[in-house]
Structure formats: structure tokens, C-alpha cells
Image (cartoon, rainbow, N blue to C red; front, side, top):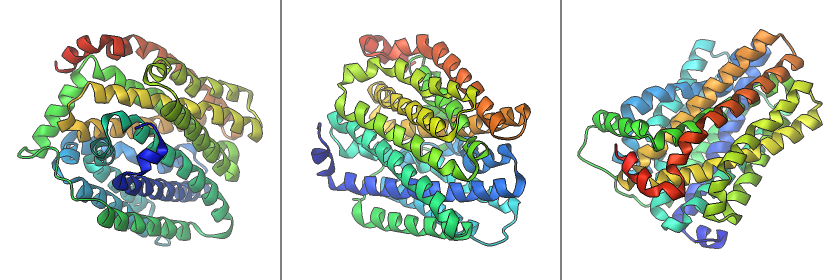
Length: 404
């Protein structure tokens, strides 16, 4: 499977792609609404970063206790529960005058459920596509993420000029209702990948095997930490650009989309695997330009180029598929998604903390982005030796190590 025509000829993939578009678009609109509410009320970069990116910290709890739910629950049921939960929390966020304590409680609910069941999405992609179509399918799902972030943040920024944040939350909930209907009517009722086990016990055992592997652990850390530090840069877009931050979010999504199209569609397996290192550095190095406190057009150009580096996650996930058992595929990707979101949340909070320590205003935010970029480069370089254990030339050794 090498073309988009072949990919979208699979009916269930079309449904998953549309659902992914609706999920990401609604999340972007709701996140921008809540970030705007928070910054307007507090003027705090830390609280704004927490409101927009901090909720996934709760995924640590869900992944630790219930992460195998992605393999033990029927995929369609799992995805419907995740979408419905987010729909309900958006409706509650739309309540005027909702207390701050309740807003942050609601922020935690969705990630908690997603950590237990969210791995079903990508695991189902691997089930319904042939092995040679997985990376193209995964890249296309990433394109949905990039494209709908452009739409979500770009349109959300325009909508904030004419509509209230309450109305944005309601629009997000409406999109999720469509996603629930698509899942319920457009997906077959696939059986769970594993049965007859305690959710908590299996979650603990599989997580221990995955994170204890000398082969898999560097892959996971590379997927989580450098990306999370760069999201710490993106979390400072609102303090840096104010009401024009939506445009920066949009161009970063566009850069990610371009990178995923090129790497996922046009590069052969061997080439994209060799580009893991350069792409990880591309993700961070352009943000060093923020030490100069660039104007908005230059800042947008730097962010666009950097975001193409997110495509390094495609060959890294290809390595995960190569070195793991299909019966645990839901938890493999659930753990990957949880660590990614937690890394982003930690990076966002760290970015906000650094910006707060450097002062107040756009200049402090820009300087903090440069600091976060330096940290991302250092982490990527430090993880390079560990990644050699999973490269294609070391498949036999990696297969043994991954089972330890």
C-alpha cells in the first residue's frame, strides 16, 4: 500500500481519519478558548500553559493503572467512550462563571479516560491496514492532526474576535457529537486484542516490559522528551504574541503537516530511518532564533521550519511496531501517546516557569523559547547512542533485548 487512493479505499480508515480530524479540531478550539480565558484573567504564562497543555499529566495515572484497556476493550467501544467524555467536559466548560477549580478538574477527566483507552485508535489503524500500509496510515493520521490544528487554531483565533469562549466550547462539543455518530455507525465491532486478564495486572506487566527494554526505552524517551521541550516553546506563543498567537499555532501545525507528508508518503523506509537524528535536531534548532526576539513574521517562519521535525516520530513508531507484539499493540501506542502528552505538559509548564523567571512580556517569552530549544538539542544528542540498539541493522539483537 503506497498511495492515498489505496489507503482511503479502506472504509474504516476513512471513518478513523474523519474522527481524528474532528477530535483535533475541537480540541484546538477548546484549548485556545480556555487558554484565552486563563491569560486574560491571570496574565500568568505558567497558568496559561497549564490550562492549554497541563491536563495530560493525569494520563500518568490512567496509563499506570488502566493502560491495557486499549487491548482489553472492544476498539469501537473504547473510542466512543473517549469522544463522549470529551464532549461532556466541553459542555460543562461552556457554563458561564464556572469556578476555576472545576475548570481544572474537567481538564483532567478527558486525559484520564484517554490514557486507558486512547491507544485503540492507532492500534486499530494497524489492524485494518496491511503491514506495508501502517506508516502511510500513521502519517496520514498525523496529517489530520496538523491540518485540523491549522483549522482549529486559525479559525478559533478568528472566532474569538466575534464569539465568546462559551460559544467556542459549544462548537467543540458539536464536532465531537458528529465524531461519536461516525464511530458508532461507521466502524465494525472488532473484538478486543486480548482477554481474560486483570486490567491493572496486565497494564503493570506490559508497561514494565516496555519501559524495561534496553531497545524500546530509548525509542520512547526520544518520542517524548525532545518533543515535549519544544511544546514548551509553543506554550509560550500566547505570552509572546498575545491575540495573534493563533497564527503561530497554525503555522506550526502546517510545518508538521508538510513534514509528515514528505516523510510518510515519499521517503522509503531506509531513508526515513536514517533521518531520525537530523529531524530531531531540526525540531529544536530554529527556535534558537528566538533569542533574538524576532518579529511575528520571522517567528512564524522559524516555527514552521522547526515543526517539520516532528515527522521523526514516524520512523520511531515504525521501530515500535517492529519490536513489539501485536497482542499488546493498543498498550504500546497508548503508552507512547500518554508519554507524549505528559512530556508536552511538563515541557509547557517548564517553559512557563522559565519565562516567568526571566521576566514579563514578549522578550522574556522569546528568551525562554531559546532556552527550551537548547535543552531539546542536548537531550536528543544524549539519546542517540541508545537508539542505535533499535536501528534496522540491529534487528536480531533488538528482538532479543526487547523481550528482556
